[in-house]
Amino acid sequence: MSPPVHVITGGARGFGRAIAEHLLATGARVCLLGRNRARLDEAVAALGENASAVVCDVADKDSVSSAFAEVQVRYGKINSLVANAGVARPGRIEVMAADEIALQLNTNFLGTVLCCQAAIPLLRGAENPRILTVSSASAWHTDEMSHLSIYAASKAGVERFTRDLREELQVDGIGVTCLRPGAAESEFALDWDQEILQEAFVAWRDTGPLMDVGMAVDQVAGAVVWALAQPPGVAVDLLEIRPNMLSPKP
Image (cartoon, rainbow, N blue to C red; front, side, top):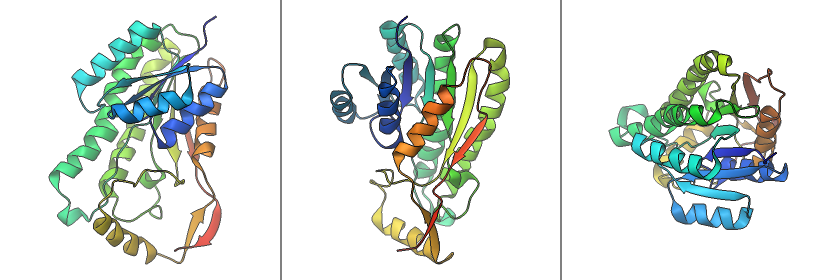
């Protein structure tokens, strides 16, 4: 029997990269999807021969269709889709630019929908097939970071979408899980506008003196591997993992 194949969107760094590493450690193969070819190539070189990559803009239907067609040529069936790709742009609602609103909604929500649509035919009939969507603790908790309204709303939409996806795919035996991770050290905010980030940071700091700390991307990756490893006929519906040690805010 061939090793299972897991497709991970946003797989070149952060949660996606850690998830890939943990799945490879189980003997699986991974295919990373992302927009940046250089980052994908670097990730594949580091992850080894059981990793591959396909350039894909998850917010573009033609790009998604092309990427999953290439995945099918390479692997045939796949065993899971981890819909992890996401972007956030902090900003006050009153002044947030329309293009940054669209970027977040199109990447986080539409991108998840498009990738699930493309993956379903490749999952149907595979061994213990799974879809895992990635939400955010920001969708339900107000203490994660201030001024992330659009990001949080897009992730709440992912959760509601995932509920119906689960019901639709039961007949095909495809397990569906939504993961709701809290904050962990990663490169997620690397390209944020520093002036806008500072404004959001000040607003967040003023909400209280303490914050939750203590979680790394590896803990999130471990939760994903556990959810994907459930036996056929069993699925984790919603899994929230958050840091759980109080620390003074910086």
